[in-house]
Image (cartoon, rainbow, N blue to C red; front, top):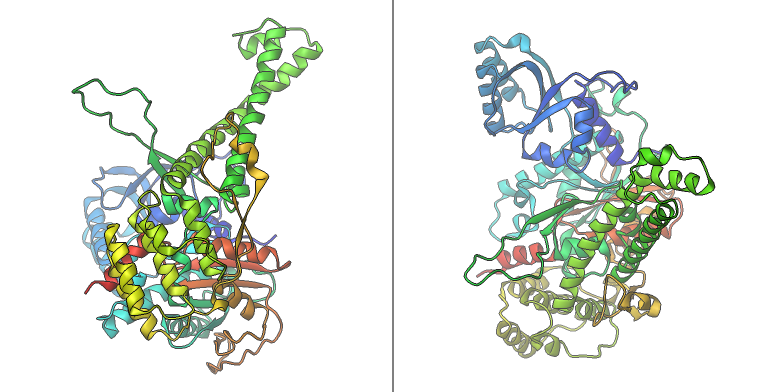
Length: 634
């Protein structure tokens, strides 16, 4: 199977950490010890891909931030992995003057300009450190891979390319150009890492089109320079996308503002929505024991606990896209299986009178049938302990999610929003939910109302709108997001019709009744057991409309770019009428796990198709509401 984008980026990082030479296959060889110096951007790129143990295996004894206070280590080589910003270049020059390390390997996340390169050369010359600067590389790794099939462009300074930055009313042309250039630079890095030149499609008249035009130009200019092209020779490698070039579909966030606000019901998206989930790491307060502090004593400080949710975690890989009640039941089943295995070890020890004995004593006993079983059980202990660690991890995370669902009645919001988006019959009025003091936070109520407002078939009358606004104000909501959506609805060309949001729908399901029993870790009392039916989000339909060359009204006006066409023709008529096998859908203005999961599920129903999801920034509904609020402030 072709390498995923995650594997390609990780391989590029490992090559860099091996002084830009392919890592040796013989792992028995002692690695060269070195220090890694990165900035915040470099840290964000590395952390989801390489664990601290992997860095150590590659000889990284220390990894330090560029702008931290660092002591000289004169007999060790230093590998730098930083953005070529003015601030970073100044600090690199300072390091050269201070003679901090034995030798320097400068790796820039994006291409460094000639003038900045000359600044480093001047500093090295003045510091008499020319011979110590061993290598300077442009790595073209300016994007963050979170999954095999998901990437984002920015985490540090993401507000510079955010939905708010692109859509604010007073934006200058020069600001918009700078935002588009930043996005295009990262996308160019993405395709260099993949080693492939895509076919580009995009809608007309929005930010996605601006990105497409600039990306086409940048790819074309690089291909024109045959000697220095990044898409020829060794750089191409074995393309992830087999023999066919991928399709790259750009979409604009304004295409669909309802989905980012939607309450969700799948595990990964719920964690991102209700907990602090950031670059595949979830952080939460550790539950403190029920004992109360003595009178007059300070309350106990809550400890922050972090968990990495990685591709090595099989439970996570299997269940991250599953409905939450299914996850709760699976955690319980895993716990029961573990306890049965643990009890078997204890039972065997008890039969043989070995309670409290260590493994050494066990191995000296004659090999009876029970001893053989016990030896086998003991040899599997490391695997069992790792299983227990993962069970504890998911028990804690799922419990924290469940607490949020119960306290905010998120199942009620999810079900109601599904009905709104699929135009189903509503069994309760919107004002009743907004006015219920026990159902959700002011943010939850605002999200629900905005989805109603965006997806309404008929324009909401001013009288009704005033009534809703009053109800929202009474619950403590800030009305700025409503002001912005009102402006957006007035100016946008996209009419919210039933076809924009699929017939997703939900239905009650009795499958999770076992989760309800009192012996379960997850007592789901008061939480509706809803199961997802297949969504049909607009972004998925457009993606596959272009992917399969369907005759979709929504995509027939999409522009077509082929950077390999020498004449630079930008006709909207595709040259390739054959269906594409692989595609990348990219959301300009920010994306979310709801959309990503929908695309993953949609792809499963299309055998032989591979789709990646990317976005300029990854936000949850709370972060998106804040951006809408800033845009709507008068």
